[in-house]
Image (cartoon, rainbow, N blue to C red; front, side, top):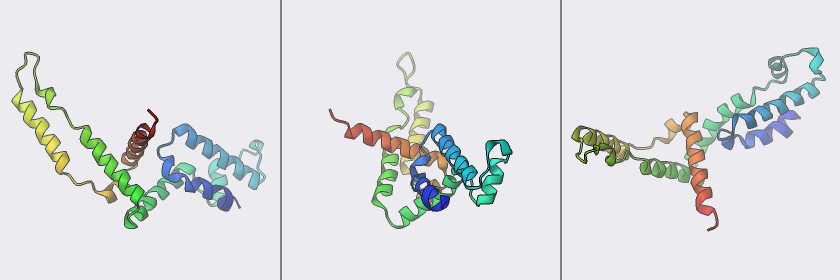
Length: 163
């Protein structure tokens, strides 16, 4: 019953949980642990470890479960050409393009230009602009996906805010 009624709801939200704070994940873990204690009629005084409870129930931690589900979700979304995920990748690339290294960093205090630095900055920026964003590689990179979600939601919220 737990897997059908509770964990399915938590799994449904796993796509955005990677952008959640550690505190939110911790609260979900506590909720799952308490549910398992109730299911197996184990009190806190019985000194049964959480790992044992999970083993009995055949479940893993919320964080581990979400790490398993996230790549599958993105792969399916990409294969089915999900417009929201495609927009997420486009927004992320656009965001990163706006974060290119400024050529002004090559200007010295006296106003002259450090040509070595300028050429290096231009090479880095050109390399980024010519680099293709590989979606399947990103599906396996939790930190990049987290950054994408936060960047995209942040921009989306900012652009949808009333003036």
